[in-house]
Length: 160
Image (cartoon, rainbow, N blue to C red; front, side, top):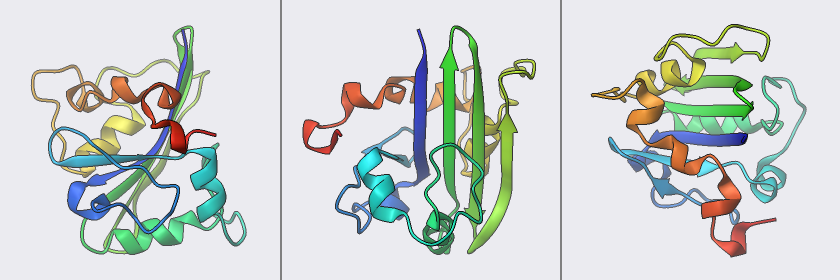
């Protein structure tokens, strides 16, 4: 079974209350972080300008300016993961103090799967202050697996 995860992750104080986008949905994670999934409607709402950054599959054109502005008070990450049958890809980038601070980091389907804790998403989560605690990695520590299938947990009014 496969999954796709495409979202912004940041300290709760950055994303709560909800960002000023009609189509934004923010959910709390463990360790004081929050997640905002990149839904098709949110993608359309925040897209602007050219695709000068264009690092990932569902990264909206011009969205790096928003993430840069949000990162003035705390680091902000954009992450993507897509897996099917044990093979997949990951992307992560972190903005801090108004600039790109980490990445973009990529893991392609052709690369060997990294040891737990060495994936692009784990690096980004550590940059946000997450710790793996007694789990294999930060992804598991934040229980991000429960958000792998956005359509399964997103309120119906925010689904495409």
